[in-house]
Length: 78
Image (tube, rainbow, N blue to C red; front, side):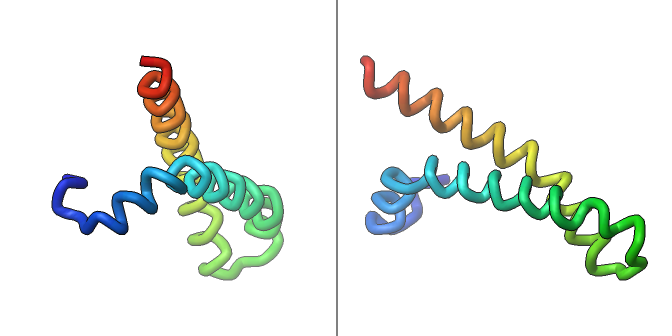
């Protein structure tokens, strides 16, 4: 799947992929901390959608980031 991407995009992903995933994971956790309590008091649909999508995405992003980190550590030691 990644073979069809341009060389610049692949270099950017190889250099910044893990850092970007960790930052995205921290951003999603921050959204959950700040907006989580608001979903009970404010009945706006966009807050509920934001919290629900952050809740669903946070675990996946953290798992993918840890998988990429473990794979890169295995590649550098071999």
